[in-house]
Length: 220
Length: 338
Image (tube, one colour):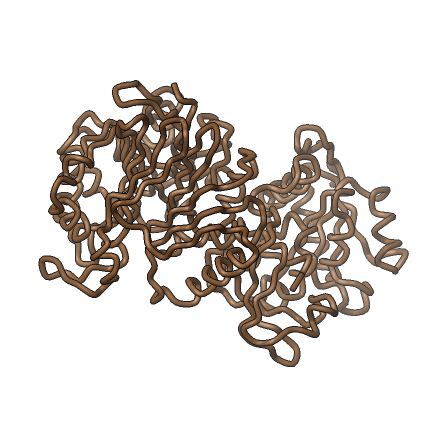
């Protein structure tokens, strides 16, 4: 079914086609029905081309007005990158929502890119997709809403393991322990990481749930 | 008119009041750790806080200061707090930031007590006066003494701050004062006559009045407090669906003591409407409110001019706010007749 409607986002951005990027053929088909239900035109990507992340991202604005992308893209060698990497590269270029199965491992993988992912879909239904695209377009025009605004804040290291550093945020509502990979830190910070260290990062303190929290701009 | 303002910032569950004059700004409590105070200070272009008075050591009153000190958004010149180191890791994190800021001379004064008699001059005739706790209470600390069989908590030792304009009471901020703390306060000679104020930010967000409270004891506490303070406006600083506040018994007690009092809540209590209001809120001012993005506001952030007693100030429950209540929460607690 070809979409006949145009969705107007953030008051002025018109979307009539949505690119579907997912390594599962059945999922692509199911997303296409969802997009058709919004009277928009689904455009399915059978294989990202060109295969490199940057080149494919550069090509997307010419392929569709918006993107619906799954986080897992590497199965069956569908892509050389994951969805978080792709969607974050589209920031301020094309409204792009990321879908995830919402497992803790996925969230840890997505978190380093989260500051450039305005919409992480917990459910894939028409309303969630429409709202997700609206959030993207609105953030591109109006800037980050309070829940995604970064503030320099204290980060308290609780435990340093071989692969993961566990930290919490004394200036944030919850005592949640965030597991961050060593690679998430710049080298000069990584070398200094020890238990009970207090350091600083820009964090969206207005986030309500741990899965929405991002860290960036680390300093000692 | 002084041009000074008094703002109850919608910080969700927690408390933060900003008192601003033409030359100075003070925060009485800093709200929880959700960036709300940072957003408000940035939006209102408040360059520095001359005083931050933390009524007691609960997270929903102090965590916002950890965020402010770490952010560098607004330097804080003086911090006073009723300390309670038993609050654990979060308290240690606050002290880390305070030590860092004191060491770099960003904070000029830090004192781990906020007791009677102390007053802070904000200029333009506006002062903040601490009415409780007394120094002996503060020195004893939470859980160290008992009153009527109850063991006071850090809430019992919550600072009670009176905002005055040209010597006249304008607002009373009792932090999370509980029934034990209130009884100790009014027993102190000469204090009960000083508690009257036209605006009251209700203690503990309208939650239980003691760890062992029942609906009837909550109602009695509210009735007695309102009878003493005699406010025209009562505000609750709360977070929708966070702690079940304000308790219906508390509102009943308020109504029993003062049937005509205006009541407002920063966010819409689940006791007033179980369904979220549809669409974007149209009744709010443009000032930052933590609940705006998720559609949780009732009054949102409330700003009133600081004027001498007897001058009429904008009240909740009228105009666009009343329209919102009629449309979204027709069974709201504030609309129920006593």
